[in-house]
Image (cartoon, rainbow, N blue to C red):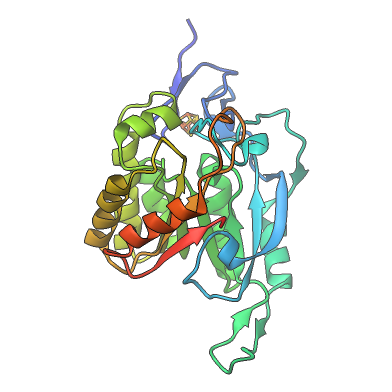
Length: 292
Ligand code: SF4
């Protein structure tokens, strides 16, 4: 039997024989090592407002060159981006090597005066790695982020937070801001979105704490799925835990819309989102409704 190589990027630790691809569909045993098959392969690119990441308190009014590839290490039945997150190697992509992306980011970057007479904002802050789960393509984020920093620009990662300690620690000095999903506050809920991976909630909570303590600007998003993670009690527990790290951590509480394999629920009611925001605001200073 061929010897397996184990991927160390996330807690799934996929053991892959030569030619096999991991759970995330983005990493493969190519013979003597595991390589990201999505390296430099872009499925989407856009110069987005920073608020769309969402980041509400990181250079507001600025834009950021946002790119995505394919693959994800979770399997949320309600994934809002499933066309790329659930795709694999056969996905149609355009090549965007790190040098080209960093160059493009620099091309678009200009500091603009603030019409209100404040500090101003940027036509492009740098690069946001987003849309699919960027950290399953860890090497691309690392290599590009170094080049972006060399040009005096900033890096943003929008992630589900399910990454192993070592790659996260290596990446953090290169990342200026993160939006991390905290999908719910119960391990049962993480069992559902991970397809039964043990301990995912603890890993995500640990990584939020580590990123915050490392001085990275961290904002959190929780997508509220009716009947699954919409209880007021759970939001109280979540917000209280975040406040134990810092009451200044911004929390985005977002509406769900039926998608992918979970279409039986109605979109989250706007009323419920505002009720949850009110609960969270008892503990946190910056709470934002999303998709309302
Ligand atoms: S990053 Fe992908 S291949 Fe690596 S352990 Fe996680 S799911 Fe498996």
